[in-house]
Length: 355
Image (tube, rainbow, N blue to C red):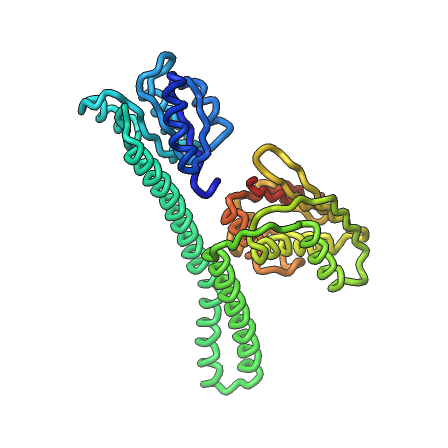
């Protein structure tokens, strides 16, 4: 998503597109245009503009029907739609709002009013997305605290009650054992709290965008991780990687987590193989980290990027926060992360950097 925004103009009058588009371009917006409702719906199957300027009266499909289809599609329902119309009657305006538009501009429109409405609704849409993401993070935190911290705290309470009984009876050996158990549970709870705080800091960090050479970054991380396990037989196959835009601290954390996982889950392989490759498609720079390790069952995919949700037993150490951090970091950069895997057949994590 560009800083100022991308706008799709839908109008069957080329002169109107030229006029409306020139004003937006002069203001710094990226403009795309189509001349029919059908073309607009086809375009939206592949692209996600920040706002749609839509003419109500068009030959193939009127703007009201186009807007209804946009708002009925889960992928496009949140894109704000502003109508162009020369009919300022209350009936027409009401039908526009009922169809799902957020505003309208009367033809012939005034440049300043036109730009003000566009700017306002792009900002509202972006703030709405930020608020929805914040609410989602809050729900996740609430779930993590209520479910995952409750368990060790409940055990600690039970142990304290038992300790009180043992102290009354004067059994020294039992008291010592309970004290050790309490110590272990308190350390576990402290670690979980620290990981939650780390997760919170990353989720609320404002990325400082700069160019990052992934070749240098990945080489540094792999050198660091290899030095920690010098006796292992690990084959690292790193293809040439692109330069991406992002926060260098957060992107380093993202790839360190992914590569640490690859090192960890190949630990039982006599010959571990970890490959990093890049694919350049039209919208994304896609960086994949693939290993031949323990893998995971795809039926648990929905738990993969959740806080404190681990898909492996205690055979592999971990906090259950690393992949959740990766997911939040790349989403803060306007991208996404996906994974494929199979038990005992390795896993592949693909990070999508938006161009």
